[in-house]
Length: 123
Image (cartoon, rainbow, N blue to C red; front, side, top):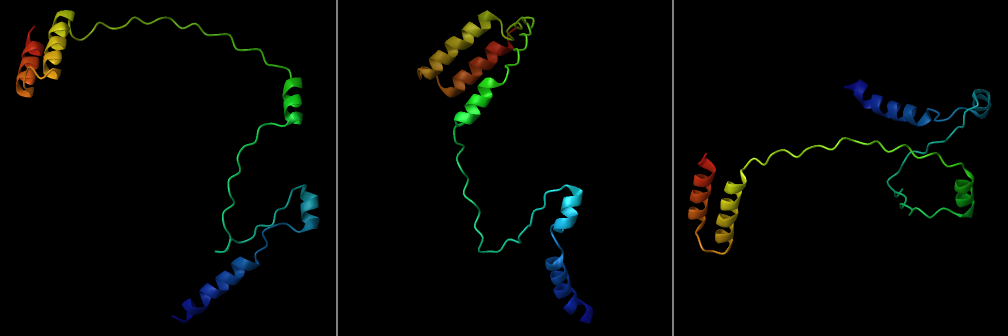
């Protein structure tokens, strides 16, 4: 139990003391850009997202001065044939008429489902 009491404070102190960036002399030798990372506190608020602004004059001139890449040739895909309808046109006409009657409240839902099942069951 005595071990647990002092391990946490030691770990916290060690974590806070570890350098997060190379010293200036080492960074120059490595050619790396160093960045100091500050620990976040509860007081820090997330930065507001900035809206993307339209490109300025310099960006527009740079974009217009760059050579345009030639457009890729359009790939011509073969046309596919549509599959045959799963229901023959005669049955589809009967189903459409039945649906029209059902929507017009000329038949009950029970009659609609019974007739629809009968039409679909026919060969």
